[in-house]
Length: 384
Image (cartoon, rainbow, N blue to C red; front, side):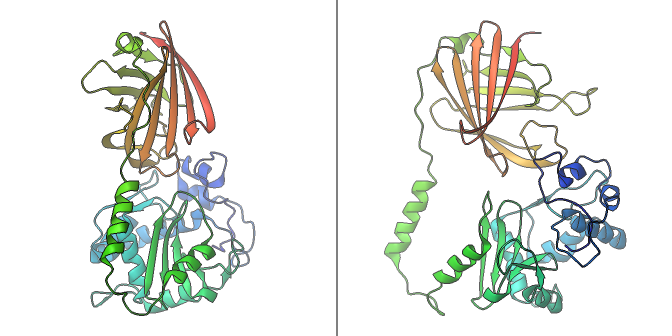
């Protein structure tokens, strides 16, 4: 991260950030190489995802295969990691700086591989010297006190801890002295120093603790309780539900990217149909359909690929997402739809407030924690 190339931090949500511009450019490698130099190579730390994307492009050229295929052969395959997803750029180059999706247990396998100095089931998958350099990182990041960088990993040398640190708090933290690997798939940033202290502070013994069936049962019950959805209050069904059920409402081009919307509420299986605008105006956009819970509980749809920044956006980066949706009438003319996006970290919740007035439909989309966030209004009407 001391290449000297000028590119701002990873801000996929912002089209004006350096990375946002890169994502929307037709040729990412050319975009990166065309960037001006902000400093001499080796002089200054500047977190720049373009550096790692160049590494991926170089690896693909040297091996004759994509970084994804190479990783499957040399890393993921030997580790038994099969459930993964990795974005690529318009030229098919696996994205070097971000966009790799893994299960938490598989993330932990990578941490365990590092903790064992690159050895896995008797095979040396990584050179020990590569990992030793990570463990003794020296590049000051100026992000947190004591946080250093080396070989694509972050480290807290004074705490004898190093880690892979991903977007919005995806972390694989390795504690070689404690023989511990900790993984988190958080949605927001947090202090790495504090996280390291919390983990190391929880280690009370060098040996296994004695069995404690009562505590194990208590923990299981707590997990069951917090993982069981509690229904929210549901208002009485408006007579409009039967009048608008199945009607198609159409919208001019808008920021939500919705071209048409239909709610099928007078049906044993309530659901929605949404058509979106395509990036290419000569083509039809994707159509999304899924169930709606009307009893205060979410209904989950099928696994689909959707935009990284908005579920109906024309964003070129796609994420595997499950939509969970529920709705309720708050008065005779207003139907509120709550969305949760399972697998989409940077847009976890949306609330759509639909107000019906004759053949017209006003849609207010709130991005955030149900009523607290930025809002976009879109007006449409039936038919057309």
